[in-house]
Length: 284
Ligand SMILES: C[S@@+](CC[C@H](N)C(=O)[O-])C[C@H]1O[C@@H](n2cnc3c(N)ncnc32)[C@H](O)[C@@H]1O
Image (cartoon, rainbow, N blue to C red; front, side, top):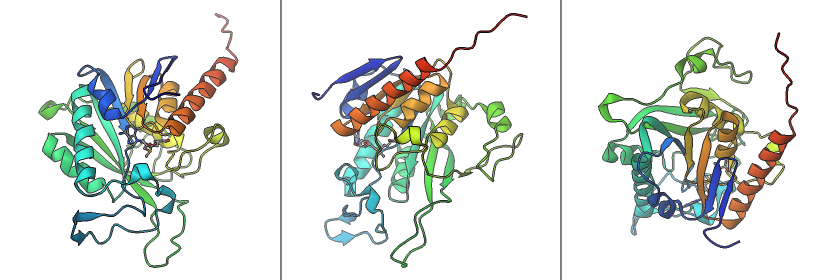
């Protein structure tokens, strides 16, 4: 597989490419929704410093599962990278659309400040509560059991962004003790982090998001028949959720192995959809 390889099938277009390069080639306001799950800078091997002389205390913790070279964002590089991808998303998302950005405490402050600088309004900050989080083995910190998800819009003061309010209010999530059918959804979501067998069948990614979390992002702000942008594909969870919701997707991944995994998952999804029995509806 060569760099720049493209996968196009069933309304899915994925490219093995740096997303900053790839997004720069796309026309403005061409997407209805973006879901960005960027590098967090949460690797235990990352060195967090304000400048070369000042270590930034408090960015440690046992995030060993996320100790990967692609996640080593440090210093100004992490801030510039965040500004760069959010600027592109601001250009590419329609005023009626919106953007989800995943974060932990390692990058949440940077995302927040970048949004303020770029004039992007944070609609909500969601806390994803992971009730089955790993215990903290050092016994020197609390058990990290949540992540942050920002919901952001580009539409200025007019706030034209889509919110599928009625669908969300009517929704019932059997595992979520904080949401009742017919009641408004709050900003704390109780969603276990475990994945079903079919989510892991083609392989796994170290920071793979559970489909039921991503499906909720689409329920809130997705547009059936619309276009979804996924700048950091990983294993392609957001694309699979987009296919199930009925959105076409464009995505980028810089790592060949993860790109292959995303392609495999999308093919598996296509096969399963095609194999599903079609209902013969008899008019009455
Ligand atoms: C947090 S993971 C995404 C995981 C994904 N949500 C999933 O469920 O599998 C971030 C991914 O972005 C990729 N990545 C990092 N920088 C990138 C860039 N500039 N362009 C494209 N992909 C990038 C990494 O290789 C990694 O697979």
